[in-house]
Length: 115
Image (cartoon, rainbow, N blue to C red; front, side, top):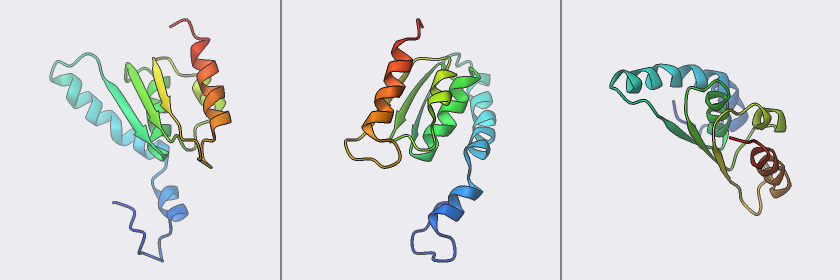
């Protein structure tokens, strides 16, 4: 169900509301289970934009073992504090959703974790 910019009846805020991180998290679980059923024991995930929040949620409960966030949107400082796996964050110099100051806070939190 991709976002279609030309669809004026379903602008981005409406699409995002229908495709929240909670839905992405639930949709990812059976995929992770299927991969693990094939014998894979270690998984990583990358999330771009709103998908970064999904990856953070997967990181908080240990369903993945490593994470990368690119232009993370809707991710909070408290989210990053709850992460339980190694994580890299790729921010942009100009980004309204995750400005460099916020990405720096995320990095400081992650760097303070012993793991």
